[in-house]
Every structure is written in C-alpha cells, then in structure tokens.
Length: 141
Image 1: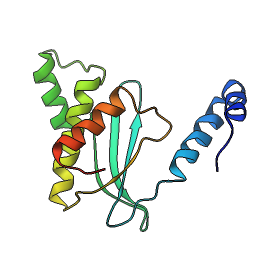
Image 2: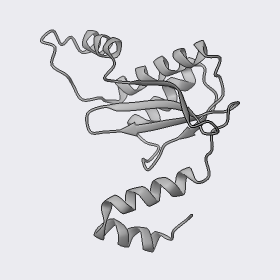
Image 3: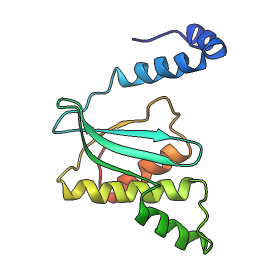
Image 4: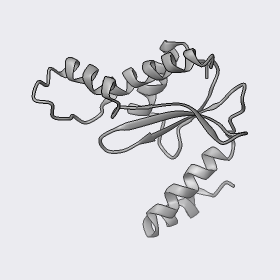
C-alpha cells in the first residue's frame, strides 16, 4: 500500500511510530523472500545494527548476526584498540564487517542470492556499508 508524500509527512509530524510502520510496509510490500531468494532484513538502532536472512514462505530465520555478537565485539575491539572493554557505537566500518560475516554464514547454508530489505531506512551510511560488505562477501542482490 503506497501513500502520497503529503500523507506520510502529515503522519510523520503527528504520529511518528505510525509513519515508520507505514513507510516500512510500503517498502516491504514489494519485497518477498522465497526459498531460492530469501530476504535480507536490516534493523538499525542508535548503537548497533542487526541483520537476518528470512524465508518468508515458511516465516523462518535462516541466518542472523549483529554487532552484539561476541566475535564481532572482539574484532571491533581489535580495530579500535579499546582495551578497557567499553562498547563503541556501531559505525560504517562495523557495518561492513557485519556484512562480510553475514555473507560467510550464509555461504555455509548454501545461500548466494538474496533480496535486500532496507526497511524504513535510507540506503545511506551504515545500511549502504552493510550491503557493500555483503556483496564483497559473495552475496548477490
């Protein structure tokens, strides 16, 4: 279901949660994951980023990873030289590494082709870095 920009702008000012849901549905309405081409869904918070590969026909998650995973935190601490163990915000470098890790995990399950679902987020910054990392890892969009 598509809405005009005027309606979305009006909802954004009055009800931001409803605006986000409608925008996500308008993007996701065109994207469906199958067993041959599952959906790569991305969620971004202020500190971390999460990605999962989903088969929509059976509604099951095939592969998932995030920047909160232990091995990702260890890799990020090595990159940033943080010996005190404090967490850092997830930036574009971490998102690129997450894309590479996701591609590696999906290769183990014989998944090479996916449909990219950016959700309500713009294809910019951390979302773009994750997609670039996944492509470098061998996933085809």
